[in-house]
Image (cartoon, rainbow, N blue to C red; front, top):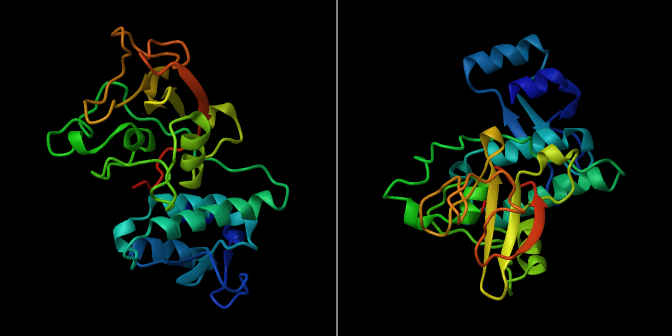
Length: 247
């Protein structure tokens, strides 16, 4: 976070600034450790500042970064999902309403061969393709829309895709390189997500089974649109969803 602030200190606001009244008003950021406090002092910043808010679109990307890298357990909320989803929507809207391009997560990629984070006996059965696509292990068998309080109601591209968008996934990014997950449908039966990993290989985790980098033919997945997907015959499209909070 300090690197983002150092690059553009103007995205910060004083604690007493007007950020739009009720609703999402940005984050309060405090420099607590010695190194961070020293950096802020050199930048001429106070120890506590406000970042983001509906009237500060230039801070949208840093706000979104902070939103999805913060530890949810530190939020004093019984169920942070709906609150996070609302904050996400407001951050996006603060850019969109001013005619600016929609921001996206950077195309952060993980190993296309090491799936130890997903395939341990204590969590493999409890995380699915949506968890894997989000790169967020919840042990809840995450479902599109549940974090936002509004799950999908049918198995089709529109319903499942819209539910993911409610969770904060995006369909418009700065460049195609930011589209790092895709949705496919087994008509009337099931949905499935793939995620782009290193070396231009797409990986996935079918339900509670092991995460992998190969398709139904045992071949490395270089193109999810043309690989052997079994019964998932409908290709819905690409999204940007890496690192989202899902439930």
